[in-house]
Length: 318
Image 1 (cartoon, helix red, strand yellow):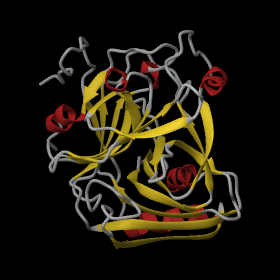
Image 2 (cartoon, rainbow, N blue to C red; image 1 turned 60 degrees about the vertical axis):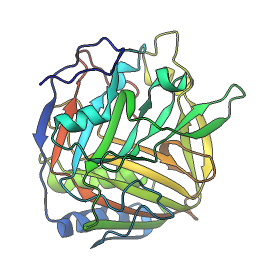
Image 3 (tube, rainbow, N blue to C red; image 1 turned 90 degrees about the horizontal axis):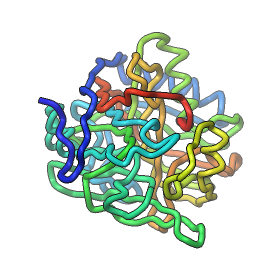
Image 4 (cartoon, rainbow, N blue to C red; image 1 turned 120 degrees about the vertical axis):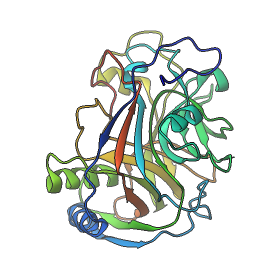
């Protein structure tokens, strides 16, 4: 059955596509991640552990775990945002998850808020449990004075683009990653993704989860309202975005895949939120000597591609 748009939205979506991902044993993935992180951090460890209760502080997720038929979803895409916004690309997570056989999914990741709900363009930090109706999602917008503002988001309607992990929200075996004292130029996510690519080559391996920046500061961007002039290069997008230096602790919701299996994917995407009113799109930490990371990840079994843009480009995917 074709995906139906939310009420009041007129749009025809591209067919949903799926690709099974390579799922090496978690212990093998952990060894690959530790080797990769050691090239960029003086102290790094990756190991398979029992998932802690991530619904508690400091993570504040909408479910206790990230296990249970984990899938990555890439919905829409950057071509819906630039060069000019396609305002009719609006999606309902409940409908999408019902259509892929996960009506009670727990969803975390990174995307864009629905402008028809918040009144402007905004970064979205999806953190929603469809089964329990527990919505802990937040969004960040740029205020008129140029400052960033983090707010609660009480809907499962999203727009334009979204990269998320969908699971049953269960506790189980996960990969715990810790890293500190950054010695290289890479950010935590890119280093892990590239390490997976080096190890597994043409076999796509996808991970999703949450990590905490426990100490330090990070470079974060928040999208301002939509551009009225076409953004046709990375330089134009960079000039349009608003950048901030935000302090720990920051909870980062992240998905990444080692190789695009031909679905025009965004291969990594991470957004963060906090209990002190700061959040947005994570780029990298700014305090190499003092930064500390702690994260929990699961290896996804499938990639679900929803409404792949018919006209595509590579602008603005950093």
